[in-house]
Image (tube, rainbow, N blue to C red; front, side, top):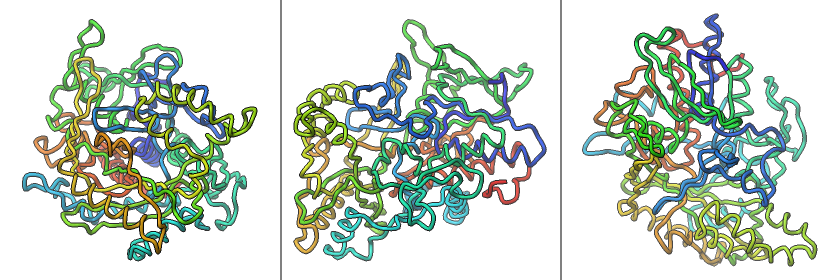
Length: 568
């Protein structure tokens, strides 16, 4: 790694991978040396390297800031009434996301706060975002599942029986389906004929959430980051950023830039790098936590760490949302569903037109057959393997929290799973949560649910209509047990914390992603969303990252390369 770069990007999810490619392309097109560095805390996963062995928890879980070998794929954090799950690795949460590419609800642009629009009205977001959505589509090549599986058909049957058939559709999924969409599990050395990496076509294994070991998912390491590196950008894995400091005006390289302090997790050594501009894209908890520590300071053991960016807006930490994530299961239905076959999500029932703009979507879920496959390997087969679930509960309980683990394992009846249809619901909750830090710099979340209760009630009523109609699924509905018992939700789509605003009194960053009061410091990830957007947010985060990339290029490099959505 060099000591200085024009651009340093913290994190490699949608908010970081996209600027990495666009900035490298722009510098090349301008005839300049490419000087783009991406610092990613997690590991790089090549084909076949995602974890599958339950007895090695450190391969699965990211804990203790990556110390003591806890550098796994899944970052699970439990707060008082919200659990947040995200990914860690080169490609960020795209390594775990469920492939869905879907636009924001139009009603999300109408959300107000104290009589002011939450989306700054200096930008015509309805007109601009579709341009950048097309760029994301051009890179990720989303298409619906070619042959709907049983669980897709079950969701469609439930929708039609409940009189909601016109709201059902197949989703665009960022998955390689093979030539003409007619192959399963077939190797292709360059599936999109653009100099990309090899991929296998989807085999319907259902392992989307735990990393696709045959690279059928179009995760960011296979496109944006792959082409960024081919263009000259550098991606450094296992580099965990701990601080951002403005450079003094006497700095010989970047007098208007910043120094980024990090820990090399391979060796445990600290280091630093200077940048003319910094793009923070470490995810909602990563970006917001890093900037909160920079704004307020904290204690590291007996040492007091002074603030380095004290003038960040006081709106920092606000507008947190779980994007209305809500889980449930239809069980004892009248059909074989086999939720272990096919991509985790394939179809959707959409309700964007609910009163007050509190729309939501219902997607069918699934889960891999990995646990049953592992248990079958034990002497005595599946029956004896079940007796080991107590051991697995203990292992996972230490990493994730005993209460949630108990709730999950109590539902592990493999025969009953055949007629079970998991639901994954997202919606426009009130986005009134607050992220803060304690004196040791640890993150806390206050998430009041009172203003979102109308949404949850509407969701529950709709799920019952889809599930219990005798003409459809004729099943029973079980809500997320942590919600039913404690009003505690689990989100894999955290949003907010560094919201866009028209000025520092309304937000943390400008519509161009630049942090108010700190020139050349940007945030580009889900933390800048000022509202819950309803559907799966990755496509919208990607579109905003494309837009922010254009603004940075215009400021620092000049003309945006023509056809920047294409690879050249």
